[in-house]
Image (cartoon, rainbow, N blue to C red; front, side, top):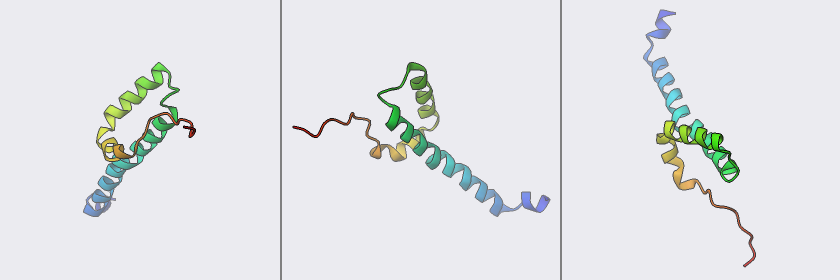
Length: 77
């Protein structure tokens, strides 16, 4: 068991897992949630989203060019 804890490969794999969850997985889930609920959120849900945006800001900034929170209008002119 001690050799597993001292293994640098396991340490690097753990760091990669934590960083990928922090920078990729949770921000994508948060963007999906915001994109679907942005115009229908209540005040407490919006407060929770603002807190999560503050917490996961580095990952969100990576995907920010792809987020569009505008209303989908009619195609008619």
